[in-house]
Amino acid sequence: MLESRPDTMARITTPELAKAYIDERVEMLRKQIGDKKVLLALSGGVDSSVVAALLIKAVGQQLVCVHVNHGLLRKGEPEQVIKVFRDEMNANLIYVDATDRFLDKLAGVTDPEQKRMIIGGEFIDVFAEEARKLDGIDFLAQGTIWPDILESEAGIKAHHNAGGLPEDMKFELVEPVRILFKDEVRVVGKELGLPDNMVYRQPFPGPGLGVRCPGAITRDRLEAVRESDAILREEFAKNGLEGKVWQYFTVVPDFKSTGVKDGKRTFDWPCIIRAINTTDVMEVTVEHLSDELIDHLVQRIINEVPGINRVLFDYTPKPPATVEYE
Image (tube, rainbow, N blue to C red):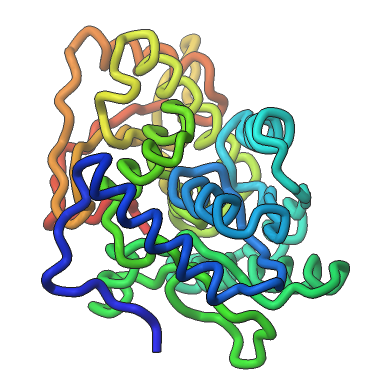
């Protein structure tokens, strides 16, 4: 039976509580894994990074990290993951470029839950294929956290790392941060010695930009999401908001509107900006940006990103909205 968060569990807010959790998890991981190997989906986000650090502390070189580029990552992200983990942390990292494979399977798919299940299922298939190339892989590690479980159980949305695994999967699951909220994962990561730019990196969903490209994913609209997101992250860093705002990203929905550029009619997509703060992901408030910054973002995005002719700002908290659009 999968582990659930005890009702009496104290919130991990201090280095002392984090150390106690780490010591407990390391012992549990060693007992569970023994002398076998464990395969980890390493996205470079805080959840999978903390899982990697815990597993390295527990079983060292028995951990095999796999970074899958599904074509739905942010601009420069695959290169950054390789640099940080392979070059700086000396992790046993396997890089898999599966962009065409994922996007071909997602072509024409509009239902959000179907898209998530395709992405999650394909992830498992990729890991299984990589595992077959290796000897002694018995475990699959995942960065599942407690809000993932709560939302899946409530039927709000499926999570690629909280369900949908094939019944004949040959791996036993290892989920060392399953019972933690996002803020607790960061405290644990800090205590494990991970760099601040990794621990405090804004969260990124497992299905990646796929959930920020509502409707059937096309490569041109996906590129518009990627480029507008890169501009937003760059401007937040320039304006001292990086690390202060919990999450910020752009969404490019699948509808167009009429506009004007260089005296000619355009018929292009809108770009929606979302900037939010939270501690546990269950409730979310909106970060209000200055008029000057919003004006600057509008000008950069409509002038630098092909296919965009409007920029909108989402002021909706959670509830009633969820963090992501899909």
